[in-house]
Image 1 (cartoon, rainbow, N blue to C red):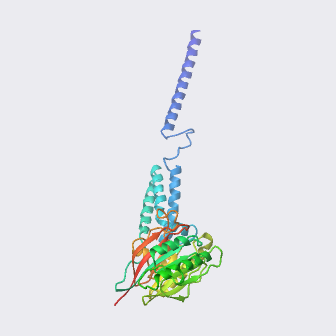
Image 2 (tube, helix red, strand yellow):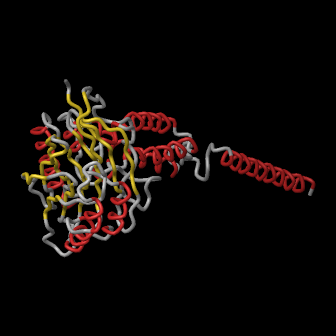
Image 3 (tube, helix red, strand yellow):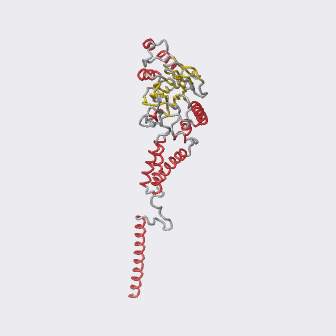
Length: 383
């Protein structure tokens, strides 16, 4: 009995030691799982810290988008949709880049941090204004105030009339002016308007009468293709630029100085109209190249910013952006709903050699998605 009892006790001791060893091993496994060594099946490694976190993937997606846009800007191309649309808001790429940096930092993704810093630096570099700022010397021979406004299918005509009465520009470039818009402008500023009777031919008065005009009438009920140039100074009709939307031209006699005028309103860079957008901006570029040697003003809704290659090619002819000359090159003009806090400057007043710009302002008009732009210009001639 003693032998049997001793044998039973030996078996129990062995079982107890086996159970204890198994328990210890289980505890070790659990501990290793908590510290990131191994989890579950020992043959399956745990993921490395941070590399597969959703935050890192999100940062990579943002940085890839920003880098693609910046690469096109560096390559001097507008590429294909959605690049032209994103280029319009290039300065605002700082925001998604900063968000990407935050997620990269939280995910401990070092490559993402370096990538984000480089993207920030390149974006900041391209925020700098583009184009010439060299202003000519010489004697001032004419002073001109130019106002350009897209009235969005004529809806903002009343607001424009108010702005014109307050600003008293010499030249007014109006885009998207349909039939009702033209009638209202005629009533407000025509030869038989009340303002014309009040001015009574006082040449020194910056009155609100605009007896001279050159227009392209709208062929649609919406009026997006209607455009008009209003002038306090005599106008001679000139060949405009054929385009989907009206782009009339004229020559103004301002204090004995002939100044060529061209309204700009190319198609917007919609995905289905990119080819037309490029073609019509190229036509404006050709016009600028042909007229750089004489006093010329090209104003309107260009549907392009300095970050679009097609627009920079116009500036490369030697034309200068009035807003650039006064330090307002990044002030948004569209969409009016979010400007000036957010937007793109797609409305411009471009001038040839011989002009200086002394002041620029952007006006908020009711019932349009654009802000009006007013630029004070001085024409100089070397003696």
